[in-house]
Amino acid sequence: MPRIQADTVAEHHAQQRRALLDAARALLAETPEAPSMGAVGRRAGLARTSVYQYFPSADALLAAVVNDVFPDWADRVTAKVAAAATPAAQAWAYVEANVDLFASSEQAVARALRRVVEPHVLQGPMEAFHARLQVPLLQALADFGEPEPRAMAEHIDLLILHASRGLTGDSPSNQADLAQVALARLRRLLGGYLRLDADD
Image (cartoon, rainbow, N blue to C red):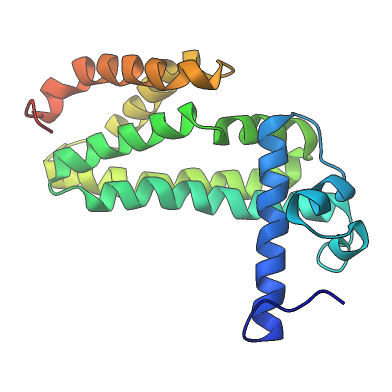
């Protein structure tokens, strides 16, 4: 039996489950194929049989990854928006956070999940993710005084999507530079509208 490295059995199980989810996510970032239970166990430092104590099948593990990553990605964006001081800065923080996600290894995870997970498993978490992302942007735009926050939010999302397309599939060493180029373009488009100062 593995040695418990936590104060309680429940904490130990939570830690092991977290390690397995992180391992599966890391493997998905490296290859677009569904990772085997054995590979996930090895990455997490657990025996293959131990993985089945937490997830009864590879499909169950992938579904758990889906339900884990989308809230995490939303947390990253909303936290950056919340840390900004003004509505204009919050709207720009939303842009930056989304471009950061496109330029990170998480984009490879997203592509892999679309490849290996059934669409019905992805649909609910994806819809919840996009709906949650809209909340801080809509609030920032409304506080900024935008008369049509929902329409403007849709335009901003489309601009982010188009500006970030060049980041998808590029080598990690080049993605940071490309992200800065994408942000510079977006700032030229949105900086005047948001009345961003040079130091924002």
